Every structure is written in structure tokens, then in C-alpha cells.
Image (cartoon, one colour):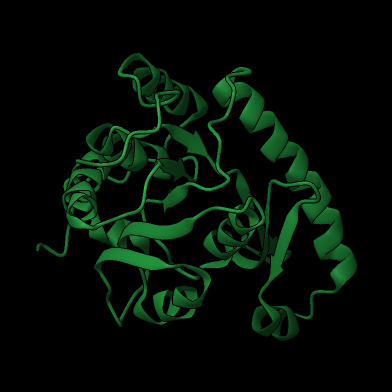
Length: 228
């Protein structure tokens, strides 16, 4: 297995090959973390003949360093907030800031669901095997929030599937899932983009196009079909 991927689609195809060999209990639903996880997950959903949906989650950055996650909030009723206590103490961030930011980012999660899915009904998640997909995991705050959010939906099993993740982060996330599929697990890790030749940022239009293409092939709202 190469330690680099040409693009997100190639990464999704490589993950799909591994997932197809697993004896996953069906029915299966593939859940993408937008934006970068969508093109990865779309390839997986097509290969597994599974419906494709989203888990909307937003990072909450440290005020002085917005790219450094102090927390994350995932859609839900109520929304699921995960706080990185080590970062919070180091940065001196109080809970009032995190709660205020979580309310703001929850509105963005709601906006994205409406824009991306345009009212399309979400596939049933209770009793299903849910495969959560992103294009990579660095600190793990957003993925942890997403995993905890879907756990509240009474799935049969939860699978984390990512092309690349920091080894230490992945070890911490194992306790949140029933199974992990990760192709590259570097100990010395700086950024997800380092493992892709093409890691361009996606916009809303590209996410919508990928979801529409999935619906046209019967994977965005398709029947619950166990992988072959």
C-alpha cells in the first residue's frame, strides 16, 4: 500500500477494497463528513451498494489559532459537543466561548444539511452498520464528535474508515467504534494533505454535485443492500 493517494477518489477506492472483504453486518449506510469526506465516501457507497448520507460536524478553533481545534460540535438533538480538555487548558479557553461557538456552528451544520441534501430524506440509521468516512484524521476532535452523535442513533455497529490518520489519534478513537479501517497510520504526522497529490479544498457546489451523482447511481437513497 502506497503512503500517498493521487486524490480522494483513489483513496475511497482503496478503502472500499478493504471494506468489501470484511464481514460487516448489514444493512450498511455510508456517512461522509463534509466537505473532504464526501468524494471518498461516494466511491465507497457505490462499491458497497449502500446509501450515502452526511454527518454534519464543525470544528471550534482556539480564538488566537482558529485552525487549532479546542472542540467540535456535531448535529443532533441536542447537538453533540466534544471538548479537547488539554487544548482548552493550554489555550485558556472558557466554556462560555465554546458554548457560544457551538451554537453558531450548529446553525452552519443546519444550513449545510439543507443546502447539500435539499430536503432529501435521510436513510434509516437505527439497527444499521454505519461507516463514517473522512479524507483523513489529524487531532480527531471533529471525528470524535461525529462518532458520538451517530452512537445516539442506535446503530448496529459503527465503523471508522479513513485513508490516513495520525497513529496516536487513531488509537484514541478505537474506543469509540466497533471497527477501524485506516490505510496509512503515520506516527510522525503533520497534515492530512501531505498524503495526497491532489488535496484541493472543495466548495459547496462540488459537494452537492457528488451527492447528486450518488443519487443517480442509487446510492444516496438506495435500498439497504449488504456488500457483496
